[in-house]
Amino acid sequence: MKEGLKTALVSLIFSSVFVLALSLLIAFKPLSAAWVHGIDQGIKALSLLLASFLCIKDKSKGALKGLFAGTLYSLASFFLFGFAAGDFGVDVSLLADIGLGSAMGLICGALSVAFGKKASSY
Image (cartoon, rainbow, N blue to C red):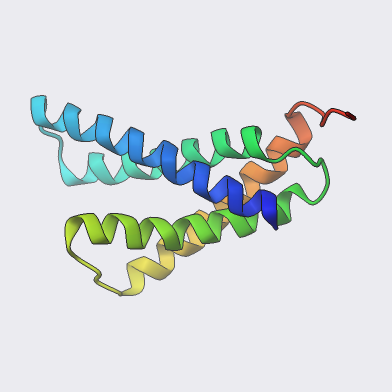
């Protein structure tokens, strides 16, 4: 549970940095909404993957930790970015986003356990 929470928070930090970089890119080269949405999903997946590899040290129940982290991350990012945009529109897309974030977290958690470094014994 602790690793899942830490993974979600680190994912939010990575996302914030990547979204800021995307905003700077859009300032110089406008992109269509479809491209931005696709890049946004990629940012979420990359953020969860990086955070999973950094934060999940105990190599058991990685998928469960990832599922928890992905769900928490999706909810937290909705509130964080909704607050920044001044829009908290709750609709079906929010549920889809939570489902997708949960699935991405589950996969990233499993990958971090399967391919990540083993936890040190000291």
